[in-house]
Image (cartoon, rainbow, N blue to C red; front, side, top):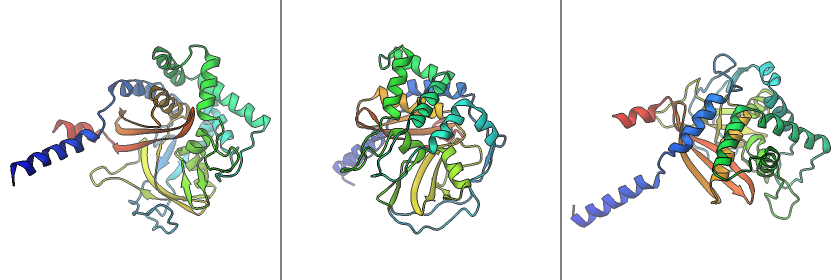
Length: 310
């Protein structure tokens, strides 16, 4: 091999390595602190049980035909009494019912629904998780220390209605896209990155889990708190979806709010280590509101730590 080809190969491989972002240590430290503060997180095996079953096959976007590699539901049981007794999750579950899942259909927010949003945000702001995120954002000059101003900021990011499709009314919001899920042109599922909504839709037979998505050396297990998965919903297929499992709504909102406010690009990906998982957190903005946000699991059970030490 000529020295020119060899040097080009070295540059190319070096570029491949460099294209992967470095672990954001500051945010990893903050997010692990939020993880420890998340008292409303449910415990696997105790508060809920999942069955990851088989690896899902490749499905192209827009395809409705998919092999089912999971004959059983993902969630075999969830402690719903606990969910309903926690203030943030009980309000969160009420909000899930307030949205029309088709994009292009104008959302109408009633006075009662607006009241539910207010009460949900009030509950979230009282948690230690969101208080710590707020303190961090204030220290970075990204949020006002006044709680009412911060609530207004959260409302704009998560609940402000906007157009996801042209020539329609206000048909979407960050909350609806990320936590509830939407269908686009009756052809594909967009968003839908929340485990509570997944469980409720699966329980009501609107959703069918098809299997997990993972690399050979990194198979998921029952206590993983982030999963990449495939599912069908209202007859449409999501080839690869991802969600935190067992975490509280305030934990997920805090993470994505911090990433959203700490960056100004339209699309942001940060690499973080949280608990035993290494993941990318992807945030895409829609003006001053959230377009989408989701975790993308890279490795679980501290495999990235062990690989690094070899």
